[in-house]
Length: 187
Image (cartoon, rainbow, N blue to C red):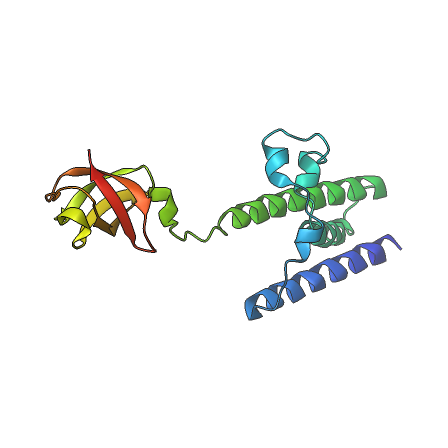
């Protein structure tokens, strides 16, 4: 009886895991965990009031599948040992719990990689940079500036309402004019 429980747990957990991996490789997997996940960011930041606790921050379908699969596989590996039933169940539970925590951490780490990295030019507003190509006076043409936005150095087209701004001069962005153009003033 005990061995059949471990066998079924291993078969169910590993089958679901294989199906999830195949669907993910094919790009067909949805975000099924989103419905089960608790606010992980709030739990990690220590704000656990009303959001569950840190344990539930890692509880997801994938983590539960890992628990079931590893619980069953560990139980099967220990079935032939001379351990008592209680000790086999304890070791299987501990191994399943460890797998669940590892998968929870991995899913959290993968989730943090999901940021798009798209440059938001509005983040340039108020920032200082240097003139790369001379900016003509009175909005008569465009020059270029180099500025650091979102942790990276970017080159943007720039105009000014004031006098010419020469190459190498320090400027500050005062207005965002479009997707790649800003209005600057000399600093």
